[in-house]
Length: 589
Image (cartoon, rainbow, N blue to C red):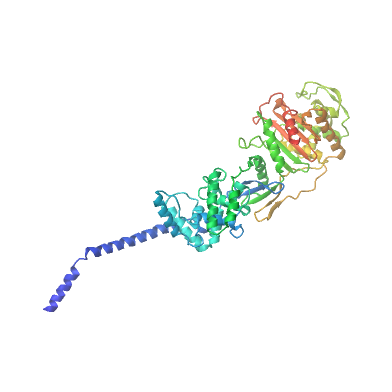
């Protein structure tokens, strides 16, 4: 009987439903497990959507091209969104210490996430009632900079945390700091402290003083707000805070901080590199012709003389209130030392130094060289009188004819009939052959109007003709690049010029230089005359659409063009002997 009662009691206990507390515990445990599975699934999805972590570190971008002048100094760069890579091992310690002191003073002590810093920032923000401080570690900031995403999404924050742990598992603290210094966004789309140092102070990161390091570190909080260029007062104030932190963390002495504080100053405005843009655009074409497609960073050593370029870029716009203009300076051997393709690159990127235009009388030396080669001299007598061949009967510019005059006088006065009669004597083919020997014969039309400059050519082409004359008749091929290297200094291209060819006789060149000297002494180019000018020639195309002056100094040929981009006529008073000659005079004076 007792056994039956115990069995009945056991059955009753088994059939009694669980208490509500037990059910609650089970329910919470289930919810907890579901949450864990959900969070794990969410993190897994976010992880799978992340790009390759290795590819993140090796960011793809357009190849950066750094242009150097003839002295090896940087003048401009293309696609250089990042500076030269830096590392804690090679930088002066104060550079990276300034960053650590203000951004993450416990960086070398905590893991990927600084929980103490986050907690401190959280309480500080609650105390102030708004977000006044952040708790992200340098590792987290590095992850953020690598992703380059400003989206305030949970998914991005999860990716940031994943990447932070991955970074510190794969790299040392110093390597993470290197990544941060090379990727941090600071100035106008540029990234890395080296790019910021070059932009703000004109020095590399490895050359920064303690004061400059503090000023660059000051920008990390908010690049625009604390820019030493845009808001120098705020930048300097924060830099002082950084110097104080560096003292407090035993990175520098109090005396070091005081000295650096006295050196804090606003950043100077960066050099306007637009004055080199026509030149670098021109050089880019030669780079592609030498190397083809560009897939790696390049250092391009050019022939540009910075002082000459800046001088011409300053002078040219002062003469061009109404019209457009261009100027080229070339050594006798063809090295292009300056190229200004317009008055203002920001207004127009069209390079007028390479645009084909009618050279007018500036082309006349070609037929006169033919005459001199065929035994004539500057004192040979020619006749200036009306000329016609078929329907072609051009007049002299001033409608006057001088009768019997010397070849030198005809050239100095730039009469039209004499070069046409010389062409009739020696043949149009002799003119085209001479132009080809001078390097400009490919686009010339086989007609008499070509002799007076009706066939188009560029300012570069025309300047090349005159360079041969002053190069003692040796062939000249313009060049702009001496060598191209990669960032490691490996040479990818180096100019290896072929031997120049004698294309004009010594006596022919001597006579022509004398005649070009007469042009500036008593002819149409008198306004170009200045101390050290050896000679030159004016040119004006039909209806005053183009005006030119090409002249020479002791070691350079300088060409100037003035006109309208749309080929409309200029004022009838504008000739090669006016504005272009005056520009040339001011360049060499």
